[in-house]
Image (cartoon, rainbow, N blue to C red):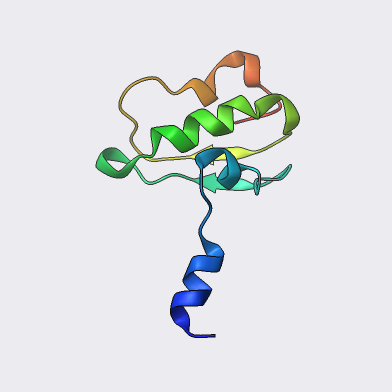
Length: 77
């Protein structure tokens, strides 16, 4: 197997699939400013009720930060 096959094996088809990898207690770092992935953030927020103590960090966000809403306390921080 060459590097191309390894790369393909690591790709996930959708943001929803990607955030399935997030587990309780994980620390999730999002790239800020122009590279912020709003689709990944939205998919993570959709899973908030299933998760506990997941810390979300990004240095500078433009627009709503739904993951920081008080209703997700204990799930997303």
